[in-house]
Structures are given as C-alpha cells and as structure tokens.
Amino acid sequence: MSIKNMTKEKNWSGQTMVSADHLLFEAPREKHFMTGSEVLKEAMKRCTVDASVSYPITPQSEAAHLIGELWAEGYVGTYFRGENEFGVMSSVAGCAMAGARTVTTTSGPGTLRAMENFPMWSGTRIPCQLVLMARGINSPLTIQPDNLEVSFLLETGCMIWYAENVQELFDMSIAAFIVAEMPDVHVPIITAVDGFFVSHTRESVMLPADDIALFPYNPYKAPLPPIDSEMPPGRFLRDPFVMKSNYISYATHASWQWEVRSAADRSRPYAKHFLKGLVHVTGDLDAEIVFVACGTASHQAKEANRELTKMGIKSKVVKLRTIRPFPHAELLEETKSAKYIFVPEFNIVGWLDKEVTQTLYGKSEAKIIGRPRVAGGMSMPVEAILKEVLENVKKGA
Amino acid sequence: MANLGPADYSPYPVATYDGILTPPEGKALLLTDIVDEEVAMREIARVMLTSENATIFPGPQVLYAWNEEAKEKATLIKEMAEVLNAKMIPMYDYRPKYPKIDAAIEINPNHPNLTIWYNNIKACIFIGVHCHYANVALKIVRAETDCYTVGMCSLSGHEDAMATIRDQHASDVARFIKIAREVKQELGK
Image (cartoon, rainbow over the protein chains, first blue to last red):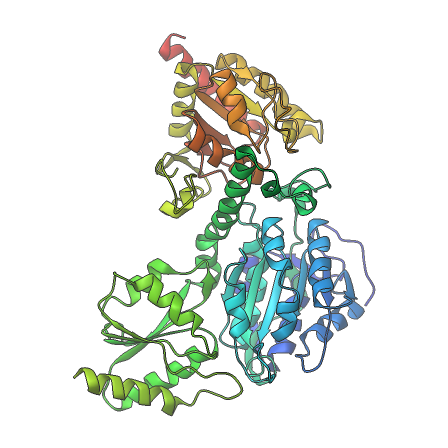
C-alpha cells in the first residue's frame, strides 16, 4: 500500500477517519481468532499511528515486529529500531514531543533498562503509549506471565491500564490514545497485559472493519508548546530546578509534580466512558467473598467464582481496569459487603495486594488476603484459589 | 479548587486530591461547584470589578499572531481589560527568570507569586497560557497569595483556579465582555 496525502476524511493509508466512539462502540464487528500480538497489530492499524520505535529481543512477543509490518504496509507513519530499550524509550519521547502519535511495546527486563525514561515521559506531558506485555524481571527469566515490572512503573506518573484478554487489549489500546491525548490529561499511558497468556495465545475477538481509523493526534491541543532547551521541561532536562537552592525553584518543581499527578487523575471520567467503568464486576453483587484482581488473574478468579457458585457459596470478582489512576472510590463501593477480600496475583511481591490494603485501610472491616500469589513461571490453577477461600472461610466460621 | 492548605507534605493545594476535576463541556467550575457558564462569567466579572488591582495575564497563545483566532482574541482581551477596569501584565514565555524578572511588567509561570506580590493583585485572569503552565502557576498562586484566580481556557479548563470556564474561543470571549458590561452597569462601576 502506498502512502497517500491525508484529506479531511481519509488518513494517509486511505482509511476513513472516525471518532473513537464510532470505532469502539458503533462500528459493526466481526469475529476473528487471534493472538494478543496479532490483535495489537489490528488495533494499531486503526489508530493512525505516526511513529513506532522498538527493540525486539528474544524471548519476546511478536507485537513489535507486527507493528513494523504495519509500517511496511503503509499504516504507520514511521518505524525504526532503537539501539537498546533505553534508546527506544528516549526515541519515543522525541517522536511524541515532535507531535507524533507514538507507540512502542516492551516487557520484562527491557522495561527496567529503560526505566529512567518513564517519569521523564510523564514530566514532559507526552501522550505516548507503551503496551507492556508483562513477563517478569527476575533471574532466572521466564516468559510465563509474571507482572512484577508493573510494580516498578506504579509511581512514574504514567497512567496504567490493565487488560484481561485480547478483546480488552484491542479496545483499551485504541481508547488509550484518545484518553492520553485529552488536553487536560496529556500524560503517557501504559497498557498492560500478562505476556504469554494474552500475547501468545489465540482467542476469539470481535473487530471492526480495517478501513476505518481514528483521527490523527492534534499536537496543537497539547498543554505545552514544542519545547526548546531553555524552556521547561527542556530546561529542566539539562538543568533541574531542584539543583538551584532557592524557594522559587522548589515551588516550580513541586507544583509541576502535583500537576502531572493531577493530569492522570483527570483521566477518570474519560476512562469511565471508554472502558465502561474503571472496574468490572461479575458474580453475586452482595457476596461476602470478594476477589480483587487485574489481568488474567481476574479470569482465574472468575473461574473460581463459577466453582464456588456450584458449591452454593456466593462470591464476586472486582476486576480493576485502571491501576493508575487507582479506582479508590469504585473499590470501596464494591467491597462494602465483603468479609473476605482475596487478591490473587501473578507476582511474588503482591503489589496489587498492597494497593488494595492501602485503599481499604481503616475503611473496611474485611479480612484482606493477598493470596494466592504465583511467583511467575506457572499458571494460577483455580484449585489454588479455591483452597485459599475454603481454608479462610472455614477458619473464620 | 482545593481547600487552602497542604496536600500531603506539599505546601500546595491540589484540587484533584479533593476529587475536583475540570468541568464537563458546556459547564464552568466556580470554587468546588459545577455551574452554568453564564453564572461563572457573572461571578468572574463581579470579582474582577470589585477587587484591588485586578489584572489580566495574557499568555503566548494570544500575545503572538500565530493565527487569525489569536489576533481576534488579542483585540478582544484589550477590550475586556477596559470593561473590567483591569491592568494587563503579559506572560511572554515560560522560561524561568528568577531572580532577574521585572515583576512590575511581566509574570512567569515558574514564579508567578512574585508579580502578584509586587503589584498587590487581588484578582486575575489567566488567558492564552498553555494549560500545563497555567496549572503549575495556579497552584503556586493559590498557595502563596490571596489573589482570586480565573482560568479562561480554550481547552478543558483549570480546576486549580477559583473560577474556570472552558472552550473559550473568540465568540465566547465576546460573550463574556457583553456580560461583564452588564455586571459593570449593575455595580455602577
């Protein structure tokens, strides 16, 4: 496909440009059977993406390669390889600062190698997207889902959404650009999925036609003008305010950080609209046993919910779709009736358990049980979840 | 607008930490309340007309002739200043200028309190300032001064201002001027 000049109706690849509401909620869809990586390619195909940078290594998902194919097919404006993950994330910043809708994907140790860039992304208010196909960072390495790297990203100032399956990955990664690019939000977004289970396995997914795509990003609605080396944030990248020991400099630095956090908070109403809620609840609404989970752990919790129902035990699953901003109000509301809250997780540290405990501290009488916790490299059997539930309920009875 | 006082360990009030967000389309934010745009415009006009040294801070988006809208707005802002009996102190750009800033003639988002202190400004309107810099400045002004702040924004508004109206294009600025004239007449100013 050849690159064409963009018109008011058509983008450079000849796709008809439509609103996010039309693409996500109104356009007819057809069933396909795809891996998460393939689905991400389909999502990016419909996003009028200006730029993508990657550093695919082994073991990896195919997502970065497939976005490269989109460039070859004429759907993505430019695509190039970084020298390493740090270089990739720096290049992503450069593309986004230049006004390009920019996406990259990474996972595992590569995420940590690029770590310094993520708070820089949010500090410079760029609305780029990182699709994180989480697979853990520990030695020995694993390609089975372990989402430990998410815990390192929690306080970078970036928004973090978590998809359970390929369908959510498709819808979220499209909505992510729209929400991140809102002028009052305008901070980077990390769309996370559990690698392998979502990236490598094939599932049914409903997709709209590929002859429609989002309108392009409009950098003229950015909350900052193009930066130069004197004007902050350009200035602070080489000459941080905090290095000047006076109160005025401190004021700017402090207010700036609050503003970045405020920006992510302003995404709540937009996320509520495009994700149909910051949390998704299934099961018995008044149940005393509540699972709080994200990603594929919530899928396994739903399986446990079905098994418990067969045993005549009521339970419900609160799946968190957004991690940053964290859905405090929604979690409080959905755990009102809880006596036991289980937080099943695919990592060794229990970062979601800590988030849940912190949110509910002093506000809930429920016993919070941060288990089962699978330390990567294996799946989370439903039996492990049931064992936790039955043992704890028996103890409490 | 946040309650006056520290948010966590920061000296800065941060509206989003009180659950206050930018107003939805077609609405305005007055302190903590979402109100009709006209209600906010009337209150903004009243405060500007009754406060000591009321000042408009035009930013780069209206100070330079980027496009026709910028030129049109700049002309209207001069008219607005006349109607509100307000001074104008420009924010030419966003480069930090401490300690060399001439606070009598310029405001800067990195230390906006210097200009407000120096000129004893009790009410102000930020207009044509890019949202990020307006928000950084508004938090500092809220914490360091007793100045009533207004964010007149062409995009989504500013919850850290005490009053904010959003999607303000040239026709909306003209509407505000008309309302301000009415309020001025009511107040006999």
